[in-house]
Structure formats: C-alpha cells, structure tokens
Image (tube, rainbow, N blue to C red; front, side):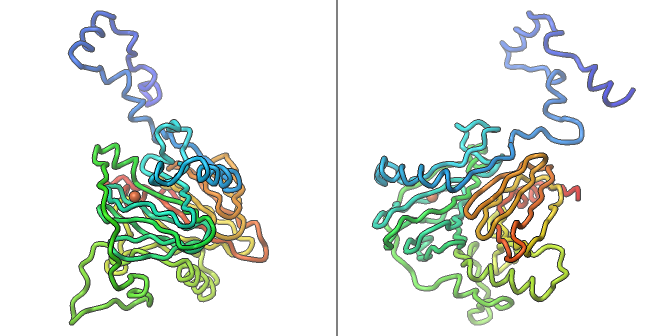
Length: 351
Ligand SMILES: [Fe+2]
C-alpha cells in the first residue's frame, strides 16, 4: 500500500457513532486518527504564516495619526502591529514566533521603564534624537541601528529631537505568550551608567579583558550601529568580490553566538543588479529594507520593497531577493526563527 492510499484510508470523525463521540467529549478525550494527517502532514508542514507585505508609505500616515489620536500616556507604547492575516490579525503575530510593530515616539515624549520576559529588538526606521535606555545604558537611535532589549532588562524610550521617530520592534512575544511565560513589570526611570557596548566592542577581533578576565554579561552589547554593520558589508564585498552572498549576523561579541536566544538577526547587502536565491529553510523570516529598492519573491508571491518596507515569509518556502538598481547596492535587515529551530533540533535547510 502506498503512503497516499494510507492517508486516504484513515477513519474520519463522522465515521464514528455520535453517542461514542459524545461520550469521549464528556471525558475530555479526542480520537487522534481523524486529525493525525493534519498535525503530521506528509513532507512539508502546514503553515498559517502567509507571505505578507507592509508598505511604509501606507502605514506611516496611520502611525502619525495615532500620534494625534492617542497621547503616549494612553498608549504607553504607541505601536501599529504588522499582523499576518494567516494567523488572524487579532493574534498580532507576523509568524509563529515573531511579533512586528512600528512604534512612534514624538519629540519630548517618554515611554516609561518596564521589563518583560519576551526579548525585543528595535530597528530604527526614521528620525534623530531619540534614545532607548537599556539596563542603564543610553543607546542613541539612528536609521538602521539595531538596539537589543533582551529578556528581563529594564528599558525605556525618550526623545530629545524635533521630529517624529519611528522604529520597527521585533519580539519573540508570540512564542513566549504561547508558552504562558509572558508578563511585564513596571519600573522607575533608570539612572544612566557609564560605558557603552558599541564602543567597548567597536573593533573586530578584540574584546576587553579586565586583568585577564572576560566579561560574563549575558548581553554585553546592546546597540549595533548601522554605520558599523554597513561598513562591514561593504568591506566584505570589496575584499571578496566573488563571495556568493554578502551577509553578516548580529552576534554576542563575547561568545560569537546569536545576540538573542530565540530570534536571529542579520544584515544583507545586494550588489548592483544582484539576485540572491535563499536556501529553503525551516524558520520563517522577515525582510526590512534599509537602503535601495528590492524585488522579493516568496513562493509564487512578488513584492517590491522600497526603503522602510517590510515583508515576511513562511518557513519551508523559496525566497529570492533582487536589487532593482544596476548602479548602487541595496541593504536589508533580516530577522528569523533560526536560533529557536536550532535549539529545538528542528532546523532544516533544503538548499
Ligand atoms: Fe518593552
């Protein structure tokens, strides 16, 4: 008997007598076989995550409108969530483990200190003069900077500039919420401590050693300036013109591992006219365009990303990225669920 024949021959719920089904329900029991193939489909997982595109030009005026409609005191965090319709918008998730939100902070506003179990990062989209204070470290925000607010660390946002500041939040909230482990604690305004990780670890290949001792902080670096990541990509492209993919991973400079436990973060440069066909991998991924113009293919869907646009791709799906410009490079920020898949032993790359 072939596998497909076996699939077709599994018993259905309606094949069972109603009184038997009712009795199972009364005792909180469920027959597995009618649902077996739904939870263990052949070859490729069922994915609720749909290839979805969010235009910054569309969402920006709606976010600024939220600034008029809702004062920061009534929002605490003024965010429009980029929700994947495949999961249902009310679930506020982009993928199984990723939450995405565009957050607006207006000049003079302060988003008060709190800490929570989900990990967050910010990718700064526009504006100058805002800062995030994380664990007492004041991190200035500029376009393209990546700022971590790892699990359990106090963080608050302030804005001394003169124009709106917007950033993209990426959190592992859907997963932590699913695990029934998501909560927050409110705190007082933090005192700023001396020292900044982005200065301490500004040079590749060397780390501080206080009297031969390495740092044992879990999150030694909290701000990854775009100017440094961009320079690293350009140096890589210049040094190795034949390199098949110009990409860097945001890592903990003490351990070399991913910056956070659950989600992974990367920056990718597409040379003028370049097309990248990414391997088909198990984790879902998010693509946010920092500079340039890029055509994204996700399965049979096509999106054109302008600067600050964002899209998401389900796992086990072919993704292609094409730089629309024949003259200049394009730069993408990527977030994915690879660290989670690796830790759980379910990571797969099908090439
Ligand atoms: Fe937060």
